[in-house]
Length: 110
Length: 113
Image 1 (cartoon, rainbow over the protein chains, first blue to last red):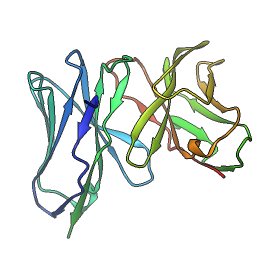
Image 2: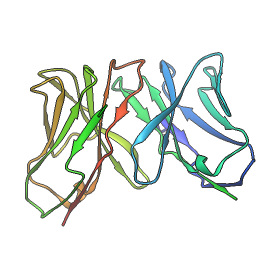
Image 3: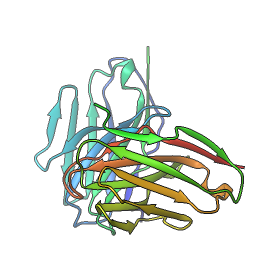
């Protein structure tokens, strides 16, 4: 089982839609979790950290389920500018570093 | 407010040539990292450093060497470039290995012919 797995997509949604991305991780000892955003041919940038109680930042909501080793990202009222690849990132892989998922591509259409 | 700066931005090499990629950060971060990103593979850690004068192997270290002679700089070397090393290379830095997110440079696109 890969350390961090994501649905690669692409997710093609209309503006205003709600879209959810899922991510599973294999190391139950993982300690920190993040969602990064990567635009085409650009560097990854931190979108938000994921806390055990769940957290929200504007239109973005992140959830963590430690029992199921599952992380989610919900985007409400999608904007054209949300089009990007979303990377699920977990700290606590086998080498004690950040482990990046391969990303889920989102395309928001007018 | 430069953050993490990578040079060069693009480079084309011939098989067997050597080169060094430079990463510089101005945030006084202890930790620095080199990743490669290939289509369908995600980001993979090549080497990292937990402080000046220290380096460690990541997931895919073969064919690469690194040095951290100054806290602000992390160099990635390719001794004898191979076509399999064609990739986008990202440098990153962070305050800590664990909890802090990483700040990335804007990447080096390297092609080996």
